[in-house]
View (cartoon, helix red, strand yellow):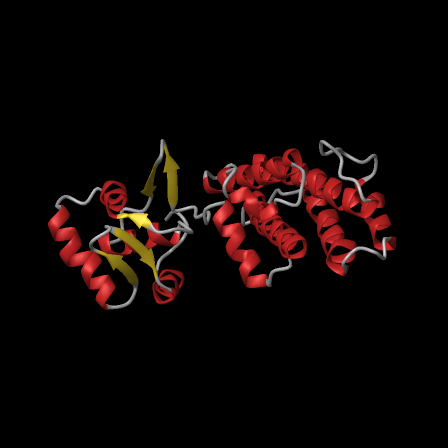
Length: 253
């Protein structure tokens, strides 16, 4: 975490580490289907982000994040801080209000729904949180939106319900997928290249030689991946990512 947190190096260490930790906790809980803890951690992230913006407006960051007495009112007050960039003055605070509302007032009134509202709430929490952190990176480091989004993906793995992280390994929770699709899905779940040996372990491929010949080399030829057969490193291509998004279910069947 310390290496990746350099993208937020302009913030005090405590605030930086707590922000990244809160986002990582949200993504981890989401991937494990723990919807309610994900919502609660969304509230914690709100408090951290508010503390960062308030400190930036005041010219002095607090040593630790804190909870304002009235989150809605204090976020609205930030709109008067005209020295702040518009996104930190208007857009992020308004999203914080919505995020805090989900955290506080979405635990009741769900009876009779055909769709699990806790899951819907957790999806909203996850993507609002990632957007907020990406915006902080974009503003504090003066980078474009695409670069900021890539930095967030480097901070936390892509969270997919169908991919389970356990004891340093990953497992695809669908037994209906081919070895080809499991491989691409695992690559899609990571923001960095994966070592061939890890893919072999995670997919539990029976034969390494056959896996290289029938999966990795064929996917490389189809430009779904970039396979370095010397370094034994595999990276998903944009074409491969599009294949996953269009052809592979990302939820547990």
